[in-house]
Image (cartoon, rainbow over all chains, first blue to last red; front, side):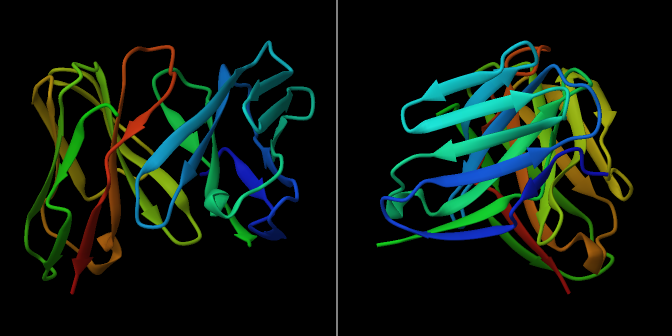
Length: 110
Length: 113
């Protein structure tokens, strides 16, 4: 069964707008990660946040983690057409294995 | 770029035939994984390896076997392919047990007719 569930499943915005994706999970975790997948390609790691961290930044990305609510959010600021991709959260809760959610499809229109 | 190569990248086969997918890495990463990706299911873990000859099952391991005789190679075998195994298969690697960043291959698209 899936550990992480992303919301929304699909998101369409205009260039320059911010995009927010949410991830909920069920069990305690060591860390939570976000990945991006361009169409027809493999996944690429974006950012990792540990269970004792609440917020992390990387360039235009901001990730928050609320372990009390078992949820995380990924914010992409000032979106660009090149940000069009699927975004996945993944949780490490069993050591050595990452469990992925179903992903959010982001479309950024020029 | 962790130098992960999957082969074949595309394969069409018939029900009942055996299929082997290969993952080759050049980074000496200890952990290797096989995932499948299907619409509506995201990525699901099939099998993983934490060292040479050390493998374990993931959440969707039925119908699949794996082998790792060398650090750099992780093979996924479908002994008798079924149409439900039509999918895109991804190999991934990471360095250590405290699961950090995974590095993914480009995927192998398998169609079972």
